[in-house]
Image 1: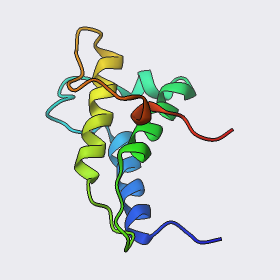
Image 2 (image 1 turned 45 degrees about the horizontal axis):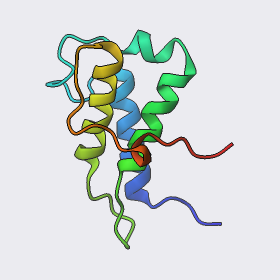
Image 3 (image 1 turned 180 degrees about the horizontal axis):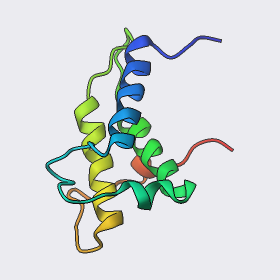
Length: 102
């Protein structure tokens, strides 16, 4: 069994760092401290990682093509989760929020 490409692992590591640090898309989430809402229970955090991984695109060489787009879609979900007046545009498609695995 192979490993995830290095570029994908680096992207996931940085995403986790920004998420835990409170710095995911600072423009969209300015003034929103999402960490208590996401980290208190596992389900919101699980959804965040599902969206990130579902949106992330990788080329044939294993290089990440759209890291900023994946982070932005997560930021939109976080904003909507923390601020119910926020409208996600474009709305999420089912494949973006799908949870995979057991």
